[in-house]
Amino acid sequence: MNNFLFFCISCILLVSCLGSGKDQPNSGAFAKMELLKADRDFSKMSEEKGMKAAFMEYLDSNGVLLRPNRLPIAGADAIDYLLQQNDTDYSLTWEPRSGAVARSGELGYTYGVYALRPSTKDTVIYGTYVSIWKKEKDGTWRYVLDSGNEGIGEMKDPGE
Image (cartoon, rainbow, N blue to C red):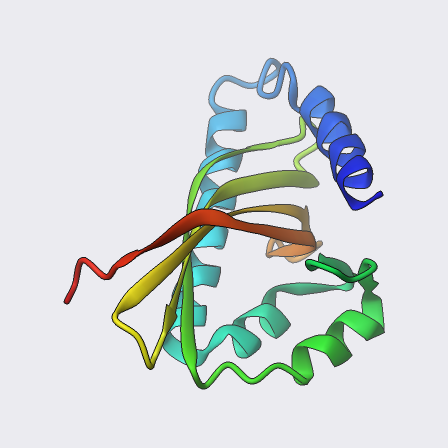
């Protein structure tokens, strides 16, 4: 069911992003750069202040988290879920590979690769993620849906 929901939302966003920027040259490109920067800033905050602080800061009040072996976690339940997380034993960072912004400029998505670095190992666990974002009235981006998939594997940390 989660995969079907994710697929439907992704299709809707993809269709809404087609033709982005037709009315104003480079407007779509600028919006995409702005969204990718927000995602990179989100990752930087996770690295500097911890995953919990970053996810709480960037979460929309109605945001949804899709996590393995769980039903979707939405709104206040997502906040409660994040508050219960212990992020002291690992570092989570990610790098967006790409994304798009709807022609309206109000919705967008990013996807990329994350790296989970347990503090007790010299390995890095890689996976993929997708986030769907909403632009607030003040111009900031908040994620409304976040999902990640393990599976790229575990490799020796290149920094070691």
